[in-house]
Image (cartoon, rainbow, N blue to C red; front, side, top):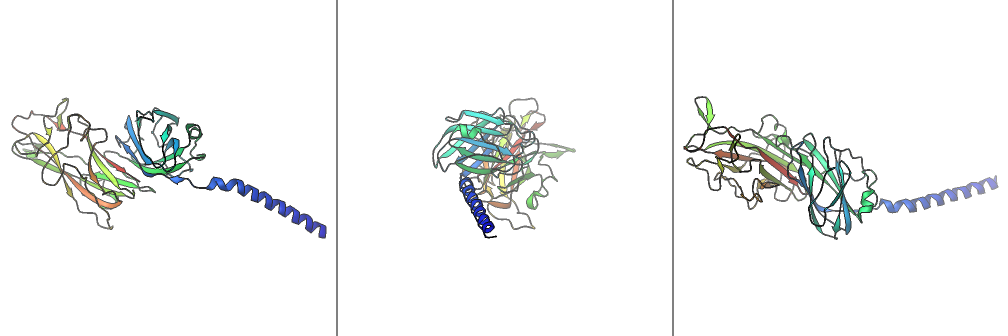
Length: 376
């Protein structure tokens, strides 16, 4: 019996030694990487199924690196968890002309490796072109991980990311007819409607954000010389982004204003100066709107600093060079949350147009995108 006890005690020590050795080998892999800061992904178009789209990736590194991986997922931004490609999304043809980061390779349809020098504590901005947005509106997520070099980055998989330097997650809202929503982990919910919006965008789909500007002329709505015709579009934003969110306005009319079907010029031009009843121009005012009941709204939703807009004159920020204003790549910043989170905050966009006696007859229109981008 005594010898059996000795044998058992020896075996127990061997097991304990094996466990200690195993823990010594495992524990170093459990050390967390640093988290990149000031991270965001801005889209040139947030519309579902849009292509080609430019995704502008921004982050500030912690440690030095030689490449980064960006993985687009349907479920969450959590590093190391299962990642399903958003339906219809494709980055297979992605490329970049950003100096120092032109080496872009696709590991699969939703995962990219971007090679370039990343200094410690350095702000990085890379434009990724020729990406196809998902089929459906909603929130998708991007996981960003930096690596020592492209060799270690090329070994990345969503559930086995390998040895990386820094990491972080971003929520990206995809819109359907300018309506964007998302409220999990890194959250950004933004919606647009033809009527005042109730809490948490609940009523946003009830009234489409479609305006018919004009006056009733014998049962027909049409612009009349001497009159400014106007109508409202309503917006609401909620986000927990640490550095807040910005909303940009983008016009699909290259001339910026209202264009007749089949024409290339805007006979109702974007208003560089205030719209009047005798002008043939199109513009916008921005007003605070009543925040929804049933919740306790917080934060700020306001006209962006440096914007030309106010609640006095109908104006429209158009630039012939297409480098700033409503026809530029990412649109014109018109609203922001003052670089802080916001919850259930409403703003109203008041559009106005006029015609004069020389304005050609016809149907006029423009398609506008409202793009919300959070910096997490």
